[in-house]
Each structure stands twice: as structure tokens, then as C-alpha cells.
Image 1: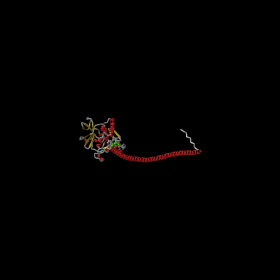
Image 2: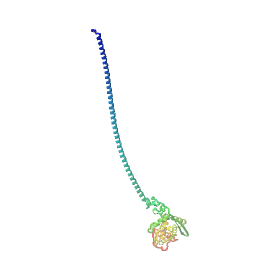
Image 3: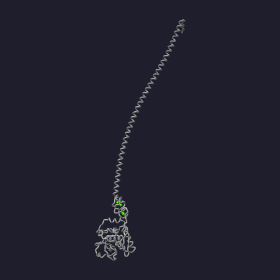
Length: 362
Ligand SMILES: [Ca+2]
Ligand SMILES: [Ca+2]
Ligand SMILES: [Ca+2]
Ligand SMILES: [Ca+2]
């Protein structure tokens, strides 16, 4: 390449230089502007970005806030729904509880009614049983439990005071009462006897209150404890002295006063032996019943001899015994008078001799 050397005049050159300078300045300036513009643009972009950023963050924030609000709202709604639901549940539970309480109360009431009914039934049953007990007569003595309560006796024994008289026939069934003391006098052979006997009034009352039957062996109460005791003592005394037991027993009875039935206002009113003892008198039947009872209680075979208008006893003796006797069941029963004094076995008042008699077995 060929260098071209151009000769430029000084003035021109100066002008060019000025222009160049101007161009340069313009260029510089322009470039500065460009730079500034660029920076500005950049700033604007940056600002725009910031704004965008700010805007989107704000939007995001607003959105977030809105979302949060919405969420809160939903949560609130849910909460209030939950509260309502809970309240409903509580109400339902309360209602169920109330129903259960009412049901239980009703059941309790019914149970109470049932219990009261049962108690009433039990009470009635007990009353019934008490009434049954009250009306019962366990010991078969003719007195109900209620009657025995009044008497003070037991419904488990027919003789509560153990005196040998049944509660229903005893004047003092629960014990007590009084003793009747009687004085007896009689003669046997050449000996005078006295004897004070005491007997419980209940026994006297018992026989006094007994219904009367026809004459007969029913009155010969040789099983009576009191008669047994009298017989025992008389037998003891007779044996001690070598007396005939039957004669000694008859002497004791003969010592009693003779009282005709008509004198005491009874016609043929038979007495039981205890009555005769306590009253210390009787007619021929009464003394015969007493004598027969005592002799029989001495384990001696004895009968009642019923004659026209009279009665005596017959005592079984060996057939070689002297005296008047009646044959009965192949045995000789010797006549023994029970009224008056001094009569012995086999001795018979003349007015009854050879009279037919009716023999009553004991
Ligand atoms: Ca009874
Ligand atoms: Ca009784
Ligand atoms: Ca009794
Ligand atoms: Ca009694």
C-alpha cells in the first residue's frame, strides 16, 4: 500500500481538528448520554423490576392476607360449625342423659312400688302366720296360743304348771292357787288316828267342775296322784302295824261324816273322791268311790257293790275268809261297809243281807 500524503493547509487542519474535537465531544457526549441512558434504562428496568417485585410481593402479600383471612374465615366457620356441632352433640348427649335419668327414675319408682308391695305382702303373710300361730293349739289342750298367752301358760305342754291338771281344766294353770288343809280323825281297833291333809284347790276345782255321769267306775279315780299318795301312806301305816290294808283304808273313810244327798240339796249327786276328801263328807256312793279308789291304789282287787238304795265295796279275798261276800268273775269279793264306824271286811248290815247286788268292776 502506498501511503498517500495529503497536504492539508494549516487553516483547514485546524478546522478539521476542531471538527474532530467536536465530533469527539459529540461522540463522548453521545456516548455519555448513551451510558446515562443505558444506566437510566437499567435503573428504570431495575425500578421496574423492583416495582414488579414489590408489586408481586404486595400481591402475594395481599393474596396471602386474603388467603389467610379466608382461611381464618373458614377456620372460624369451621370452629363455629364445630361449636354448633359440639353444642348439638352436647344437647343430644344431654337429652340422652335426661332420658336415661328419667328412665332410671321411673324404674326406681317402679322398684320402690314393687318393694313396698312385697313388704306389704310380707307383712300380711306374717300377720297371717301370727294369726295362725295365735289360733293354733300345738299341745292339743283345747287352748289356742292366744288363750294360753292370756293364761300365762305354754302352747307346747298341756300341763304348764305340772300339777297333773290340763291347762284348760286348771283353775291356776300357770301355777299358784292355794292349799286346802283338812283334819281327819278315825279309830282303828283301839287306836285313834288324826291326819292333816292338804290338797291343792286346783284339784278340788278340777273335780268340782267335772261333768257328772251316771254312777259307776268313772268315779273311782285310783290313778289320781293325790289318791295314790293317800293310799301309799295308809298302806305304810297298816303294814307297819300289821293291819289289813283294806280294813284300815275303810276305817279312814268311815271316819268322814255321812251326809245324805238330800241334806245338801242334791239327789244322788255323786262326788269324786277328792271332793269327798276336801268336803270331808258324803253319802254311801261317795264314800264307796273314795274307799274303792284308795284300796285299788293299794293294788288290791276291788269292786263296787250296788244294793237297793245303798252302795258298798267288795274286796277280793281268799275264799276261806269268813264273812259276807259276792261272787264275781270266779272271785269272792267280801263286803266292806264305807259309812259309819267299826265295820270290817265281810261284815254286812243286816238290812242288806241276802239282797241281790249289782257288781261294778273297777
Ligand atoms: Ca294349747
Ligand atoms: Ca298348754
Ligand atoms: Ca296344770
Ligand atoms: Ca294348777
